[in-house]
Amino acid sequence: MQPRRAGHPPPAITDVDERALAAWLREHGEPAYRARQIRRAFARSSAADWDGLTDLPKPLRAALAASFRWSAVEPVHEVESVDGETRKALLRLHDGHHIESVLMPHHGARNSVCFSTQAGCPMACAFCATGEMGLVRNLTTGEIVDQVRHWSRELAARGERVSHVVAMGMGEPLANLDAVVGAVRMLIDPELFGISPRRVTISTVGLVPRMDALAALDLPMNLAVSLHAPNDRIRRRIVPASRRWTIDEVLAASRRYVERTKRRVTFEYVLLAGVNDAERDAAELAARIRRLGRTADFHVNLIPVNAGPGGFERPPVERMERFAEVLQERGIAATLRISKGQDIAAGCGQLKVPEGRAARVGAEDLG
Ligand code: SAH
Image (cartoon, rainbow, N blue to C red; front, side, top):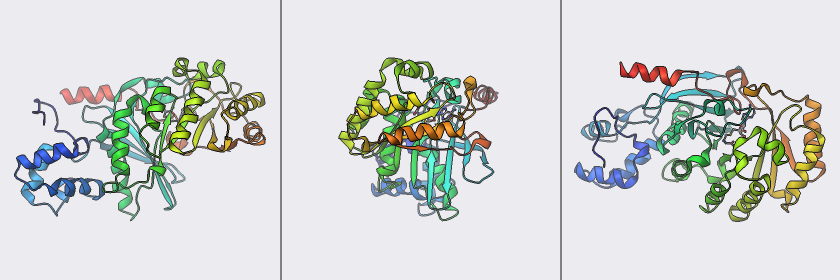
């Protein structure tokens, strides 16, 4: 393991792989089986710190605490929507930056965590609050996994667990592919979190080569592709990252993803009044998807825009319903989803760290 530089905190245990942990245990004269015991404990125990792992001898707990942080994220505060269906946490990273993470509890039946993959986001979609922040930095595997651990601990108090995870928080997951895949591998590991890959969804703005790289992993995860437009003319206006690839290239990569993984792909489509909500837009989108063949492999998720940058407005409900109908009439499965948690700015595209927060907290740390 790297010697620690002065002033740097120790790594979080979730950022230490099994081999490194095994090496640390050897150096400390501990038996090899402890590695598994420790990894299982951090994934499953609802302990708040190392001291809570009472199955481990006290001196070992103290040594672990001196070498590894128990979590890569530290909760700052939490808010709950009025309807109780969304909770949002502001989490602090070791270097003073902040991220947000969301839990959507569905009456005990299903608990979905929406996690962030970057602090900020470089993609700059015209209607997205995270995009407005720009990229602060990529998150590490531990910083991703520990968002799920944060919510797991809360749910454990009620005898519940995280059942689904979606990479739809701050950031572009495929722009931080290695860390995201590292996190997914831990989340689906039956020894650790044991979440079925079928309950894991990665959302992307459509980085074509990375979509292929994701498919090549042969993990049966769900992919959501943020399309938002029926053609390149409209898409380039609202999703600047799309200038690298045409919409047809993104759709072809989506088809390849289905072929390889046998999973359906969801197309996310944010409805913006007067921009992409016309009947002819729906017809054009349907025609494009139909050209991919076997329309049953795809699903369109229509999202009325949430308040955010750019001054975009939601189309009237009848217009949104008509958009969905046009798709359905052409054999494309489409759902109109009113996203939750807007009273606490936890809806799609609303995650954003309060202005100046990272800088302010960073400066305090220096003092
Ligand atoms: N960067 C990835 C992951 C973010 S997921 C991606 O683009 O897919 C967040 C989803 O919410 C994306 O589909 C995004 O386009 C959508 N979104 C962003 N801003 C929104 C807004 N103001 N209203 C509704 N949805 C929004």
